[in-house]
Length: 65
Image (cartoon, rainbow, N blue to C red; front, side, top):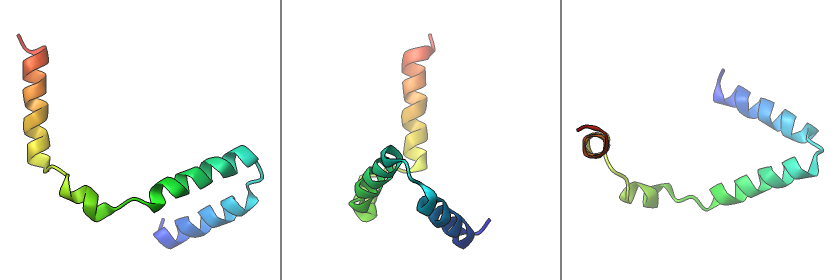
């Protein structure tokens, strides 16, 4: 399914939602993600290789005798 099709289906669904709680939850989600700064998040990101190293160390330190 293409992104355009998904977006269209979501818009149709959203226009049919009448439950106030659901609408408020969706609005809160929108507000939280409106301020997301992808570039800023990338500055603090770690590589997959670093994640692998950290995970391996954690497992070895905590679960291997």
